[in-house]
Length: 264
Ligand SMILES: O=C1O[C@H](COP(=O)(O)O)[C@@H](O)[C@H](O)[C@H]1O
Image (cartoon, rainbow, N blue to C red; front, side, top):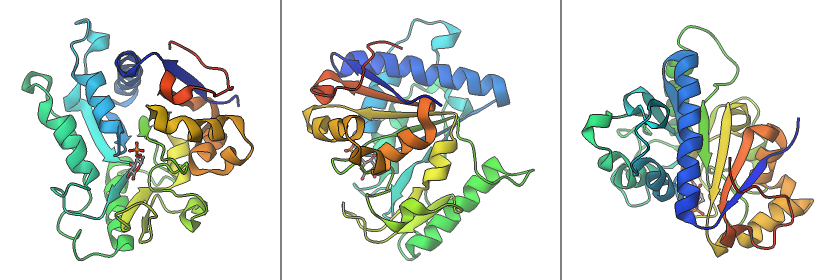
């Protein structure tokens, strides 16, 4: 299997344009395969860029139209906070994207963390409940070892974390569970749930979005050093290879020697 693609664009607007094309290609292929589009999203800076990509007017063709009523949105990771809390990844995607989708385009089905149990449930209980939700969507008829998302959209932290999989954390080695809880996230808030690495690597397509000069050091580490391939984001590159695309701007890729592409 060959490696990931690293796309580098002049600015966030050009990145958003290409990200739109990539997401809609993925949507169109998924809808032809099985009638809907099952995607997992991250929090952090991603929802803002994703909204830029999806809320702009397209060229009006059927290939360039988001079919939101066929979308099922899951979370690559979520913080164990109420859904209206400022730290909630759901709240972020709701504020940035979901609330701004014109009603004529339909609305996605969104799979949130269990809102009733979020305050009192342990991280493990919340992870189990979310895994049950995934089972209902992905394994309703068959028993499957790992769910196959059509697309997973990821961010990367300055330490190389992605989802809520942090460097050196035991959850990174999880092989069986689809979703795990964590109570000691080095980035606040500490209590979270996250998809596991085998679930991320199984997706049909996986895209990282990394913008701004603040991502330079970590991108250099991930793409140009041995050490980078053992960080959580680097492990996604290793495990999923050519299924992985990185959407970055030139500010983030400055100084990265790994070959860059400038269009899809
Ligand atoms: O805590 C988190 O951080 C990562 C990276 O966020 P960014 O702001 O550096 O893009 C994010 O992907 C993850 O979903 C979030 O929970």
